[in-house]
Image (cartoon, rainbow, N blue to C red; front, side, top):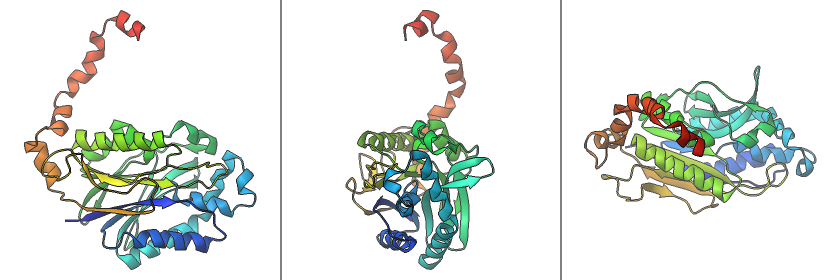
Length: 295
């Protein structure tokens, strides 16, 4: 039975890249024993504090964090290898031939396993000049199949469904939200995706207030499941951290349980939401035009 750790990372100003490495290691130390560790979206935000005059920098300057790519890749390849863990190293901004992308990197003990570019951007991300990715694939790990939804993607039901249709029973959701409302929105949507697809969703969020282009983050991290037996938590939260508390929430997960409840659970949402998919496409044609105008 694999264990998942989701980590909250509290941002703080740095004086050098070594400070970032030390901070990352201290958070990973809280996840010792987990098979899979999830860190928050835009984890390299902290590195922006190394830029001269970062407190007064314009929002579009945030993309400068992409310059730390090589050292970031080296850091997490080494940590995954030495800790013998699979680590979703949050996400970071990447300069590509098609422009800037928000990319999550999944590392295993043998090196980089997978990279996923965020396919749906939160509206305010446009100020960084970030473009959208077009692909959403899953990764088969020794203990199961996982998919990645970066932050806002979990608020788009089709993003999670696309991963589940490819066999994912765990969806990893690294996120960074600037308000408490945003954090709750991601959390509620993660719970909805867990219920409707009968899967696990692992949410890891950022916290802290470094100022500059990122005025502050509000974060909650945890692992959610369907609200059903055999899970012991009626509210569908297997493990979580108090908001804005750095550390790791760890839970053991049975990858047999999602398949079992899809057939024999109190509800069969995974099967039922697909069973009548033909009707979903037909229903709008039955809405009276005046009703649409009234909306």
